[in-house]
Image (tube, rainbow, N blue to C red):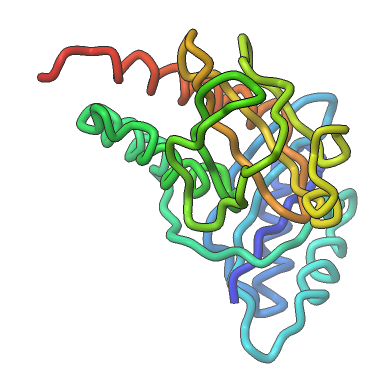
Length: 220
């Protein structure tokens, strides 16, 4: 089974090698590594690993925390296709998407950001419409969205006053980014954390900004 580990590690040469060695010694394979943030002497890494059937998830924590200075911020099961060029593939697909841009973003953004679901919303807060949604996205019927319309990307933590109680129980962390000046926005969510970081929000805003620009180009 695959798991996503979010690690906070000392930002020094060899630390990822030490983590890889610790996991390898425990018989755990690394599938992918994404460096999310660096600064202040630390780095934040998302590591997807494959756990052997005879191992429990706690063995992941035991293995990586044996490396001095490494802290596990979160651990959760991970499912979905993996490749090292997710963002490039999405950008390439956007060029051909045209009117299908909302559907493409809803389907592909969760894979880029290791999140659970995505939706594309349009309209004012009281009467917003879901233009496209990934398979795992929750229902937005009757859900108030006071943060619409957006003028800039926004982190939306699970304890927000507008968040439905059930979503709060599931610790649904979210971030949103505008797609145009008419109130259309993309929203990403993941249940059980970890919370989206500012570096992820900036990547998200960059991708949605490109999507908005490409969607306005005339057909090739």
